[in-house]
Length: 201
Image (cartoon, rainbow, N blue to C red; front, side):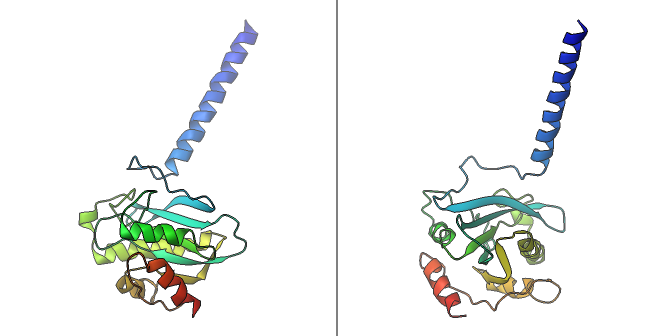
């Protein structure tokens, strides 16, 4: 009888430990708001992460890198649009920007770092409540987070869009230095234009 009681107690403790682990993992993850599958590529690692903005809201980040990459790679940094559209690019997308992002994600010598602003995609908050300063604060938090990835060279970070906020985000007080950026054309030529432009730097 005592053996059965001991076994039951051990089982209860085991279940409690598993529950605690599950709760910890879920607390450290940003829940999905969409039913579409996450991005995936044959030779690319895709990392769904998040950064916390100064107001406490968590913003979705999507980082891609070549699967066989060694050492630190330059990163193309893409922030949210002026609209409330996500920077996520699921397989089968017909969106012009999404197609460009999927092309960029598969470049062999670059990482692609994207962040959705508040209220867009999986990010917390309300998109309609955003203003330039709140977006800027979120993007600065995302830029600072580049340092935690051992496969990204933060000193070689290039803007993928929104040159107006890029100048402010990488300016005084950001704690982040990058190579000078240049605005590139949106559309399906984005990836090729970007690589050619930065190859000259």
